Image (cartoon, rainbow, N blue to C red; front, side, top):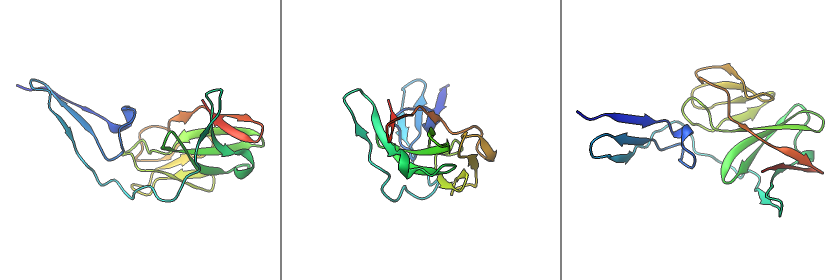
Length: 150
């Protein structure tokens, strides 16, 4: 008898949204299985720049509307940066917690184009399923006119 464990892609750092790691019992087999959860990431999110203090610029504060959001990237991963009130920023992984599609900012929410999940753009909280949990928070801060992550 062989035991197998499925590790959800979103819980494994560095694994793509189109891959899942299946680990078998007795011979420990590893297989990558593709899935078609939606469209590929398009467009060019803002490039992250690293400074000497270990922080990475992910956006310019002036580019984020108060009460709105922008798409960005951190270490090659898509993130969303929001400005709930003037000068206060929050960020979240743009990877849907349902099946790993990339969510997009739409007004005051983030919408998943694959299965219709909706998230609050200021908190990452699920507004409508099938997503089982909120978007993963990304710690960011404001330094001058730059929004940085460390």
